[in-house]
Length: 626
Image (cartoon, rainbow, N blue to C red; front, side):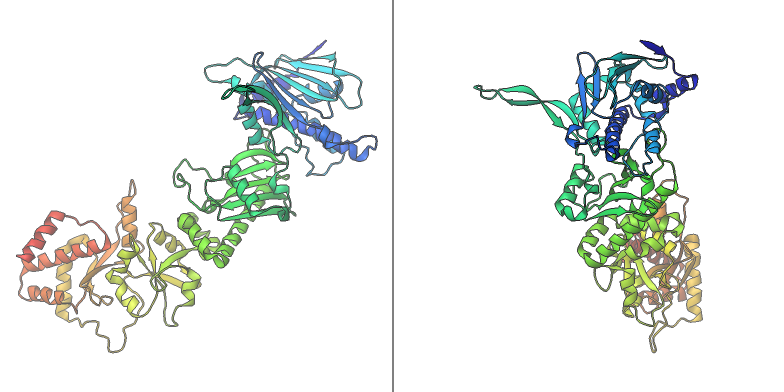
C-alpha cells in the first residue's frame, strides 16, 4: 500500500469543497453519476476511431446500491476505468479534470456529452462520507487498483482484484447529527428521487435493486417482499426527440411529470436553437394562475440543464419578470458554469438564450391572440395583470414588447379588445384613446363622466385593475394617440353646433368661488361642467395623479398621502343648479353650505372615495328631507 498526501493547496481546496462550494448535500449523487456517465462516454468516443473496440450500448450502465446495515453507498459503472497514473492525476490532484483533458486530447468539439469540467465533483462526496474508496480497472489494463481517502489527510493506492473494466465508488457515510440526517442517502425512495431530479436524462441506464411487493401464494390478503433490478432514469429527454415524433399528449404528460402545474397548458413551445448559442427548450404557458403567484414565496424561473444534467431548479435569469408565468426547461451545452454547477456565470450565452426566449414568448402570445382568441382571453384572465405590471415597471422600457398584448374591456364591443382594435375603430375627428377607471365594469358604466364621450359615439376602455392606469401612464400613447381619462379636466371634445352646454354668467362664477371657499382645500376648483348631461355633479381631476390613482396609493402601506387635484363640476342645466343659485342670491349661507357639502360628498361616493364625516353627511341629508 502506498500512502500519499494531497498537496497543500489541494488540502485547502478540499476543505472548501466540503464546507462551502455546494449548497445542497444531495448534489454529490449528481456529480458521481455525471462522472460515471463520462467514463462510459470515453469508451464510446474511443470506439469511434478504434476498430478493435465494439460499443454495444446495452452493455453499459451505472448502478447504485445502498447497504443500510453497514452505512455504505456504492455507485458502480462499466466505463473506461482508471490506471494507477490516472488515479493519481485525476483523483490525487484536486481540481484536475480527467474529462476535460480527455476532451482536449481527442479534439472533441464543444457539445459532446463529456460533463466534467473542473475535476471537483468527485470530492463533493466528502460532504456525506467519512471514507471514500475507489476500485477501478482501466480499459486495456491487466491490473486493478484501490484508491482510498478519509479526507484532507491524504490517500492510499494499492493493487486489488477486479474482474471487469469500470469503476466502483464506495462511500462510508457519516453518522447522523442533530442538523444532518445522512441515513436518507441509504433509502431507496430518496436515492430514486435524487436520480429523477438531477440525472433523469443521463444517456445510460441508472439501475437500482428496488424492494417490491407481491401477493403471497396460497395466502389471501398477505404480501411478500422481493427485489427487482430496475432502471430509474428516463435516459432520452423529450426535448432531444424530433418534434414530428411527439404528440400533444407527450408534451402535456411532460408538463405533469415535471410538476409545472396541475392544469393543462394553454400553449407549449418546443425550441431547437442552433447558431451563436445552442440550446433545446420546451416552454409552457399555463392556463391557471398558481395560488401563490402574487406572493413573495413564488419563484420564477426555468429548469436549466447542461447536457441533460439538472443544474438549477429555477433559473430566474432566463425570464423577464413580466413573463414569470412561463414554465419549462432549457438544456444547453454552451453555458459557462461555475465550479459547483449550482450557479451560473452571467455570460453572453445566458443573455442570448434569455433574449431569444423573450422574443419567442411574445411571438407565441401574439399568435395565440390572433389565431386562438378564446384561449388567449383565458390566459389573459389569469396573467394579464402581470403583463400590465411589466409595462409599469422599469419605467415603461418594456412597452414595445408588451403593448400589443394588452387588452381592456370596451364600452362599444362589450368584451376585451386590444389597443390596435380600438385604434382601428376611432372616428377621424377623435383625438384621444378614452378610458374610465373603477372597481367594476358595472360601476364604470354608471359614471357621470362618461356621458359626453359616449354621446359622441366614442369608445371607452374600462380599467378595473389597480395597475391599469399606472401602466397607461408609462405607455403614454399608442400609435401616436394619447390616452385620456374621462375624468380629465380637458377632454379635447369640441361642443357641437347649437349644443346647450349651459350658459355661465358672471354671478355664476361668483357662486362657484363661494362654493370653493366653503370646501376649503378639499378641491382645487368648482366650475360649470361641459361633460355632464343628466347627472348633477361629478369630480374631475388635473395633474399627473388621478382620482383612481389616489385610491390605489392610499390603500398601500406607508402611503405618502398623495392626493389628486380634484375639481367639482356642476351641471348648470340640472335643477340642482337652480337651488344653488337661489340659496346664493338670497344670501342663505347655511343652505348654500349645506348644498355644497352634500354635492361634494355625493361626488366622492360616485368615485368610490370615502366621505370625510359620514355622520355629518347623514344629518345633512335629514335636514334636506325635513
